Length: 216
Image (tube, rainbow, N blue to C red):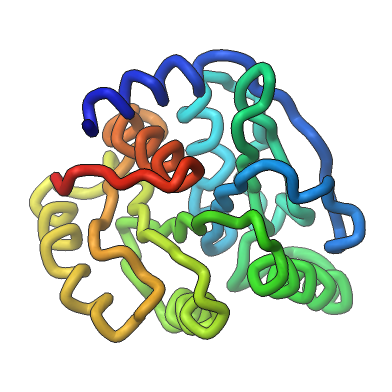
């Protein structure tokens, strides 16, 4: 089953993928006519780079070394006709922007997480060099309260030793038992080396189409 989903996901994500909109509020979002999978994480965790790696494109999502560059809910349609949407969410934790603007981002994100009926899953990106911090725990609590299914995705695993990645992947599931909306499987990825990208594509497609992957 998983191999079939991985092959289907490869065809889908390397096919048509287009930018849809940048939405500052719920009212600016397109109609909830397609399943959506959102990418969340601290500022500069690598959300845009991971989206580009998933679709094998260099510029689908804009990347930057400046924390807080993604300021809106950026949506991308995958497939022709479109099968699902990917949502690049504003980074949390810190941002080089005026305080009022940061607060507006937070409201837009929380409103989206709690009020979007077609949101199938949130992929919560965690920098493998840092692990889960207090600000990540806060977002996890919000997702638990909103009953939004989410999965931890480690990024930048090429920047740390393989033994450290193995430790995180092995030990994190036990720590997730106190988070009822969290999936137990932790995915490890590297946008630069493309490690774990096939599994991540399959996880996105499975979530969007209400299927399950075999455990690794």
